[in-house]
Image 1 (spheres, rainbow, N blue to C red):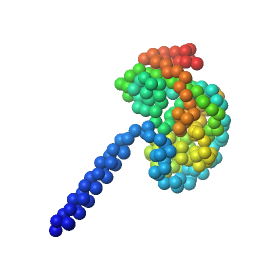
Image 2 (cartoon, rainbow, N blue to C red):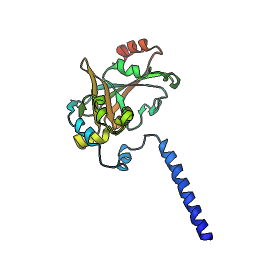
Image 3 (cartoon, rainbow, N blue to C red):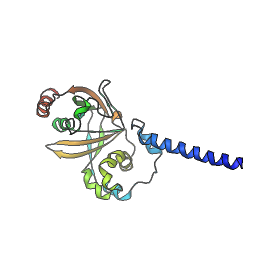
Image 4 (tube, helix red, strand yellow):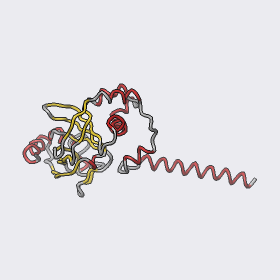
Amino acid sequence: MLGSIKKLLDKIFVKKANVENFEKDKHTSDNTSIEEDYQEEPEELHAPLLSELKKFNVVKRTKDQIIYHGSREFSPDTNFENRELLGTRKWLSDDQAYAVSYAFRDGHAELGRPLLWKCRFKANIECLQGGQFALSQYSPWGSGFPWQFPNNFYKYAKKVQGEQQSYVLLDHLENDKYGEILVALHNQLIEIVEVFVLPDDKDEAIKYAAAECV
């Protein structure tokens, strides 16, 4: 009888520990290694999405090219004080004004002053070029595509391009500039040149960036 009770209590404690670990993992920051994250996931990729991504063009970006990232002083996965872009991937832009606009999105004001990060490619890199939202009808994530695709781009790009130091998607080409540049494993490919504190007014911030952040 006592043995049966002990086994039942052991099962309860194990189940409780598993739930606590799940809740902890759910709220863990994505600052851990992207390779470690993906080693725990199934290797099988969604075939229709992979097939469409293989149709994207390949465009080469060269070392020392400048790109920009807009954020707030206390935005998640950035460290203004130490000049670090954290996490496993980042959206950047060739267009200063486009990047500045991200610092003025609704709900960002409480995160501190608007910032513009001036970054530089540390090496030449072959990038995939195409429209990300054209892929949504081929994805396994339904309405979750806008969030899931950037998080999973690395796995699909690696399958298409093979082993690289980083993986880049170029999107929204206008006037020879890509408005949106998704960089996975960004810290292996880009370096921070300077971080600018922008004026609080969006229009003034765009003017300031054009004059001072080149």
